[in-house]
Amino acid sequence: LCVERNIPLLGACHNGNSSDKTLNNELLSNIGKHMAQHGLEPGAFIYVADAAYVTEDNLKKSKQRNLKVLSRLPANYSECSRVIQEAVATNEWIYIGTLAESSGSAKRPTAYYKAFDTHVQLYENNYRAIVLHSSVHDKRRHKRIDRLLAVKRQQLEKLCKDTAAKPFFCRDDAQVATSILHAVAKSGYHTLQIQIEEKAKYGRGRPANGQPRVPQGYQYILRYNIDENDQAVKPLRLEAGCFVLLTNLSTDQEIEEWPADKLLQPYKEQNGIEKNFSFLKDPVIVNSIFLKKPERIEVLGLILLISLLIWRLMERCMQQYVEKNNSSPGITGWKDRPTRKPTAFMMTTKFSSVLLVKQGKERKLARALKPVHIEYLKALGLTSKIFIVP
Image (cartoon, rainbow, N blue to C red; front, side, top):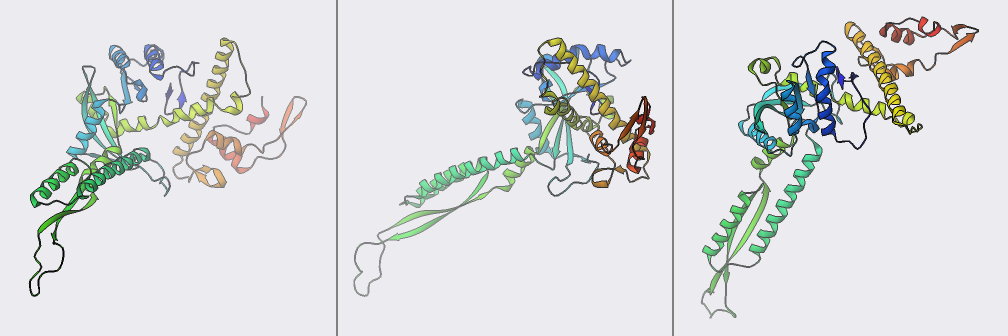
């Protein structure tokens, strides 16, 4: 459990095969007690979780404990597709813009968001649902749409080819076949243009001298062309860029206090949690340790959590320093370029060249600190004495 994006507040050791849904339920049982120890009563904070939170038991427990929650509605719920289709159909979006603090690049463009506020019903209870559309669409979803369109086109082409393979001997029959093909195409994602070509059928031999060649009958051949229906495909691609946030902040006062953009921000900050997991599971540290007893594993977990807490607090301290000094371009980062987002790892690389000399109980710097060292110490609220005073 973290606050301010990635600062750990509560943690425990669990089996790696444990269900996230079960762990969410256990956390909901204790979170109120832990927050009360810090003077925060239920309703004074928002529990932000991923889609694994959304189960009947978890929603019921949140309601019983009066916990305010924010999560993502899983796509396997029918209400999810319903509200997305509703948002696309009504086209009454609330423009949010971008949340990124830095400009994007050609490979990683900045995402722009728009929202649609509505409600869903889950397990006989009403919840607030916010449909969000991102300009940076999910590539996997679009590949799935491309595969779907390719299959639909292939099926339509096969049907048209089989229908047009044999000529019709009556225009009415050709028109009936054309109507059937149009009906099939109308229910899909392609438009179909069909022309009925009349072809005369003549008997054998040449006509008598001076007599015109008279056809014995006519055949009717279908010529078709298939194109993608932009009007049908556009909503499909628009829906692919949508996801739904679920929350019980649904009263008029809460909706006014927590509009869509203010709820999107804490939800997107969950990427800090994933970065914390990469810290705790760093193979350089964990792979070289073997512990058999559960109590020893718990102690290791405590050490790692305390280390993570210190790591993140150092980052927070440096970033707050940069924010307070708005006139400054930032602090020296990678390749000696200024950055306004210093990280703890970045800081450790700057101090790798610092050497200490120990004479008895006395410590001294082998050489004077560089300006970049002084810069980072100032951002951390420290002085050079941190190296020589135990």
